[in-house]
Image (cartoon, rainbow, N blue to C red):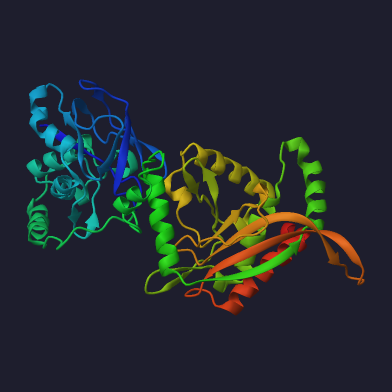
Amino acid sequence: MAVQILMPALSPTMEEGTLAKWLVKEGDAVKSGQILAEIETDKATMEFEAVDEGIVGKLLIAEGTAGVKVNTPIAVMLDEGEDASAAAPKAAAPVAAAPAAVAAPVAAAVAPVAAPISGGARVFASPLARRIAAEKGLDLTSVKGSGPHGRIVRADVEGAKPVAAAPVAAVAAAASAAPAPASPKPAAAAMPTGMATETVLKMYADRQYEEVPLDGMRRTIAARLTEAKQTIPHFYLRREVRLDALMVFRETLNKQLEGRGVKLSVNDFIIKACAMALQAVPNANAVWAGDRMLRLKPSDVAVAVAVEGGLFTPVLRDADKKSLSALSAEMKDLAARAKSKKLAPQEYQGGSFAISNLGMMGIENFDAVINPPHGSILAVGAGIKKPVVLADGTIGVATVMSMTLSVDHRVIDGALGAEFLKAIVEGLENPVAMLA
C-alpha cells in the first residue's frame, strides 16, 4: 500500500521548511534510517531519515521548494513489488502547486496519522506500521520500536502478537470525537508588517534598487526581535571593567597551554565569568514563561554567533562546571557548525542568558535585544586603553571594557540586575578565581 511521506517538524518551532535536496530518486529502494533528503529550517540544514523500508514511488515536492508546511506530503513510498501507479500521481499536482490556503487543510488531514495519541501518550510509528497494526488489532503502546529514536517500524508490528483491538478502537473513537480547532494556529515566525509593502515600493519607485527576498532565518529574526521589543520591558545597566589583570593572566595561561594547541580568547573568560555569576546570583538565572518564571539550576549560557544572513545563539550547557580550555574548544566547534548551519535544534535553543560580543569588531558599547524567553543579555564592547585613577590616586592607563546588561524587568529587578552585573565584573577583574 502506498504511504505518504510528510514534511517533518525538525524543531519544536518549525512550521515550514525548504526541501533543499533530494538524496534519493523515484524507483530507489530505501531502508529504515537511510537519509532521504536535506531540509532547511529557519536555522539549520538537517537530514531527514526514512523510518521504514520501501520503494520511492513519487517525489511530490521539487528540490529547492521553499515554504513547504509541516505535514505536507512530499513523497510517496511503495511496498516492494507494488506498482508505481499506486503512487497516485494525481495527488501530486495539488500538493505541489496549491497555495498556502489549500495546503493547510491537507496538512491537517494527514497530521493525526503521523502522531496520534494513544492512552494519553504519544506513539511514534511509521504510517505502514500503523496500517499493519490496525489490521492485526495491535495496541501500539505495547510494541517496542526498533527504528530511529525508538520509532515503531514495519518489522516491529509484523513480529508482534495480536491483542484485543478494543483499546485501539476506543482511542480512534475518542480521536474522531475530539472537536477540530476553531482556527489555525498563527505562524510563530509570521513577518511583522510595519509599513505596507505597496507603500514602500511606491516611495522608491523612481530609484534603482534590488529586491532581496526574506529567507526563513531572516523572517524568524524579524518576528522574534519585533516580539522582544514590543512585549519585553527592557531596562539597561552599564558597567566598565578593567581587563589588565585578565590580559596578563590570559597570556600566562596561553603560554602554558601552547603545547596542547589551546589558545584562550577574552570571550572564553567572559563566558566563564557569566556562568559563575549565574551561580553566585541564582535569582538572575531565570526565564519568563508567560504566566510564571522558571529559575534554572545549571548555567546554560548562549553566545551570539554571526552567520551569513543572520545569527545563531548556540548554548554552552553547564558552563560553570567546565574548564576554560573546554569552553574554548566547545565554543569554537559550535561557532564553526553555526556558520555552516549544521547545529541541531537542542544546541541553539534554551539557556537563560546570552552574550553578544561586538567588541572584537571595534564597537565600544551598544545595547542588545533580549532573546525570549531569556531574562537578560550582556552586550560586550571593545577593550580600550583609557586614562584612569589608580589605587594610589595617581593617573594611569588601563584597558577598559564597557558592558551593558539588557534586563527583562518582569524577571529581574534593578537591584538584582546590578548584583548580577557586579558578579560578572568581579569575575573578570579577578580571573584567577575562575580556576578555583
